[in-house]
Length: 177
Length: 421
Image (tube, rainbow over all chains, first blue to last red):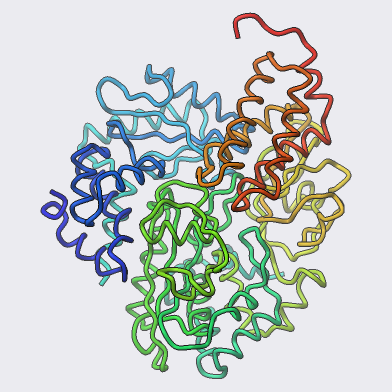
């Protein structure tokens, strides 16, 4: 249960807002970190914590793109192929990533390491093409740099480096009193 | 001109509290608390005519002035949901000059009588906002936040909140819904946030860049700010340059700089790469009508693009060279708006869906001449009928590319249909 995994974080989230319901997105981030994706269990866990119906949490998971309704890889490569990035070769980068990893866009490698998704503008258009890996920016990419990134992530994993960049930063921010 | 908003480019480590204060940081807040009443602060901001930098251009001081004077909970919400295609200015401010944003929000809180500020980051900024989070820690540690700030009778807390991937949450009432833990869908207005905003309390929602303008205005006065820019558009503006330019990036310029200078000037975009010719400009990401070469001598300002039937918006300039297929470019933007439509109102939900379908048909070689008319018809039926600006924005790329580049549409639909697609 979330409350067992993150007692301090949940206390910090609830303390932040005058209305408990505002804690739902933060709780969903913690749930996704615990369960790997917004599984049925994760949804029910968040709903119980927030006194909401599971369907209410499910609708939020469907509305917001950063909640994954299917299992994803350890490293989620979210490549922007919106217009500014596409003018600088983003569509080729998506193709290269999929070819390199042997998956279709939206898919996950068999070893559970990588998911490739295309996403809307990530506010880095001057450094196109670019992607986020677990919400960390990787910019000014080309196929060579993409290969190097994937190799680096494989090596990080072999070395036991935790790949959860974004959510780790978020959890860190909850330590503020 | 010394940089006012992107000061971190001149002053190393200004994200640190000590460096920020050594360079005049928090002097605006202290001056406001020491010398001015809350309503005087609002008047200075109104007089300076700082207009919203998120795209809508609404005067910040007027917005603050709408807040009722009665005591009670009120909120300042900083809009850091920067998601417009081609826009990346707020991210730079958050990452490198965070205290100026915090200070601007606190001055607003003092002016309207708010006891708390929230910053709503798009979820994708979770890792990038680390500097901002530590700036909040430092501000608390140095009594720039919390109880009796800098020893004055003014207390205010500051909370960060992360969205989770939805462009529509940049629309202020959708942002408030999202911050309340609901689907990020726009509210029906009135009531406006100034009356019933966050938790139904009076609320000011201002963009990151807008609030960054506030501290220097309090320090230097409204006249100083009015001296920068044009008569109707005062102050500096951060321009985001992307697409086919040699030197993409953020550039802080006085309002009034021409689009041509921004795209071709050596200190800015430095022209179109690979010897190609300029073809078209999106002056505000996907949300304002496309313009051609004839509009480039317009001054960057709220009024400058009027005669070219476009807008300043967020000043996110996406430059396209002669190789770009305008039907393809419009399709990319329509795909964006369809993906980001929140689904609450029918004209936007259905309109963006059908527009994308028709674009797919045309680009797959299966379109007919009537499809071009159909695109126009769908877009025109959406105009003025949607709950928020997103649906209105979605019509811009369609109508403006058909207007300026009709032959690119008709060339595609007059060819025989490809087999198998």
